Length: 301
Image 1 (tube, rainbow, N blue to C red):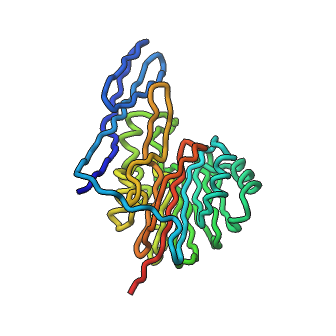
Image 2 (cartoon, rainbow, N blue to C red; image 1 turned 90 degrees about the vertical axis):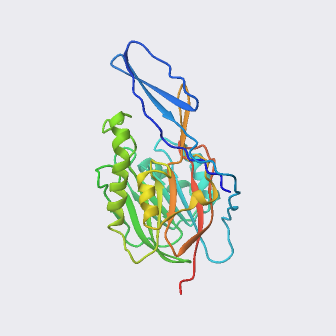
Image 3 (cartoon, helix red, strand yellow; image 1 turned 30 degrees about the vertical axis):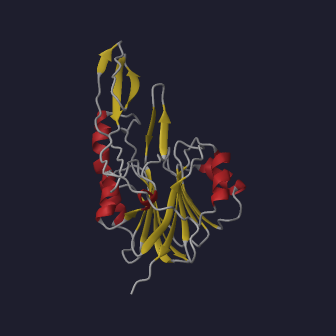
């Protein structure tokens, strides 16, 4: 028997009123109030228990397996995040390959000054607003490529890396946030973003080396039921966090009424790679939490 909780965006309801707020009372609903031109816009985000089918204990995560392995870490550090807290975690986590999102020049300078010399190979790409990214690695990063978003939003970084488990492709992504061009949550942005995510991931994958097994990780701005995640699963990729943890949020946003939480950050792997463990770490230095996974390479006959 299996017990699976799926948190989904069930409905977005926008009520516009002149000079008045209306409270919406729904069990399990989160309400965001946005005041614009004297009108209150309420966005109701409902979390629904989708499947309850018995219970099954998930396997225990092993982040330090015997044999050759690769520890991969993805972390949206928040361009305004706690640099000291993030850096302390990175020093302690000792990832082999670290994928960062929302990096700017100030972040780069701080990381350069405060990270232990565990990452002799680094690549930073700066982009306006929250679009900057970085890869920190224990292994050489020859010729990293920057992929621009097919939808005109945030870029991705792709690099081929020779590691103890073999040569692999690494794709660090930051898909479009569910906001409009003016960085506001609107009904239109919520409805169109899922399709944009699928377009973005398809465009990125069209440019990678198809002969190398891939690790695709980063801030997807969607949970496991999103269209980009579904697309990767259609292609045979494995969502490793869901193998070991199906509940822990990786993103949170407090407001006056509710704290919104979701699972926006993911690590996907392609066969013949296999995962021995994955986990979310509660660092509380950013609006996101880091996701860490250990992977090995299965023998291929």
